[in-house]
Amino acid sequence: MDMCGYFLTDIMAPLAGLLEGQLGWSRADYGTFTSSYGWFNVFLLMLIFGGIILDKLGVRLTGLGAAGVMVAGTAIKYWAVSTPSLGDTSLFGLDAQVFWASIGFATFAVGVEVAGITVSKIIVKWFKGKEMAMAMGMEMAMARIGTAMALGFSVPIAKATGVVDVSRPVLVALIGLCIGLISFIVYVMMDKKLDASEATEAAKISDPEEEFKIADIGKILTNKGWWYIAILCVLFYSAVFPFLKYATDLMVNKFGVKEDLAGLIPMLLPFGNILLTPLFGGIYDRKGKGATIMVIGAVLLIFVHALFSVPDLNSWIFAMVLVVVLGIAFSLVPSAMWPSVPKIIPEKRLGTAYSLIFWVQNWGLMGVPLLIGWVLEKYCITGQTVRDGLTVNTYDYTLPMLIFTSFGMLALIFAFLLKAEDKKKGYGLELPNIQK
Image (cartoon, rainbow, N blue to C red):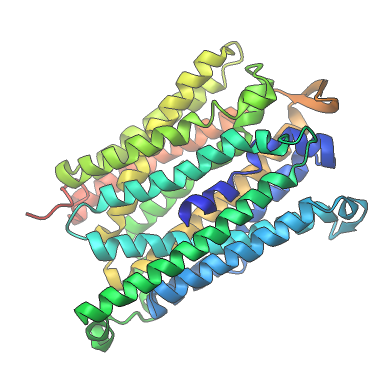
């Protein structure tokens, strides 16, 4: 389910040029569409409600609901991008096609984010005190397969019949999400059967001390360690996921890679995650050093984006090396960050704690793409060119990459603050997860 969700999340990233040429979307329109990921999660607090529902109703009902919302949102998005006539009207100051595609993406985002916290709680349930970080790393690896497939294959899918159709990759993603929903239904039946055989569900529900209370939100928000992880999360993910939204276009504009092949270079990042995140998770499980791992990841993040911002470093081979290093950074931080949350927050509050972190993260996932799109449109247009018979603008990505570099520098500061807080409070972030 996670793999299919991330496939849809990143399916439009390599299509920015085609969206401009075929549908007439500007980079500002694309930035608005990408930022819509956080509209409902942030402003309507849907992620927070999702976390509370998860702690109240459990993983089965919450997961099924989340998967259904993902399918519904993707269907709206497909209808929007496959209906050219929508581009002839406007709604709320936006091109109607951009508006409805954004509504679909925002709806999907509610489902995929709640699904993410549901999967995290499932893993904590089964792997606490065992190989929890490795299990989370393997789950993230599956999600990165979805990202890699989106980056590498969305343009070929759009051009598969010889006629460019940007809605075709979205349709493929919709079919994949339907398969993901069926897969989760199978999991629910298996999980129900296992609980019945072990008779543990009733015992957990009957214990009043294990029930989540709304007042627990205040206990989470007053935890300084939780805040450091939440801020580190939003800074780190804001320097990676929005970068991936523009990475294919960066390869075309700065490194001169052909549009059909440009997505293959950013695709190296998630493929690196597939191998390295479980590996680093295993190291955390056995050796500890979770806070230190996050510091190292932040340093690598600064290094990569700073070099991407240097104008004269424009070899596509150099770009490949930087993406591989970024993949290492992106493997280090999540492999230590997510398994660290259960060391700070009790399990009965875990769903809400994760949802609140995701809510903070969504401010970045919503705002940063909008900022980058605006900066590109306002300050970075260098001319025009013709690609595949379509006239599109060319862009200088120096300023956007400096913005991403600043996020890495802030992330490093909060990684050090988290390490100091762990030393003060004794959370055990530097200790192994496996309990002997």
